[in-house]
Length: 128
Image (cartoon, rainbow, N blue to C red; front, top):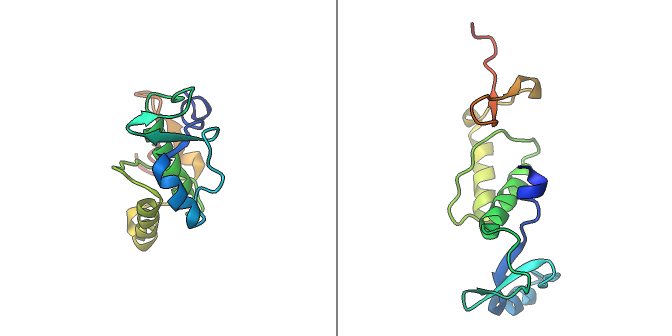
């Protein structure tokens, strides 16, 4: 399991009927069925189908990673989003910046891989 294999190829998606309105306000200008998933009448229009069973959810996670990366530092965090999008992710980033007591800047030297699930975890530092 890796970012490259399991997440990075998730495409943007949208209702095909919404595309003309989006393009009229200079959004989705490069969208096509070659680089995005088109949806109409609850059906995927792309001949090859989805790249992942959960491609829509994976793309939402990619959006969140990209949006939160704009904070300027890599994050070790949990993210739980429901129907999130760029606007909500932006609100989250602003809330993080406004609440400095809700996060801590740590060195990558203080990270290790947990034996439990193979997920990164903070190593306790300065605690005996």
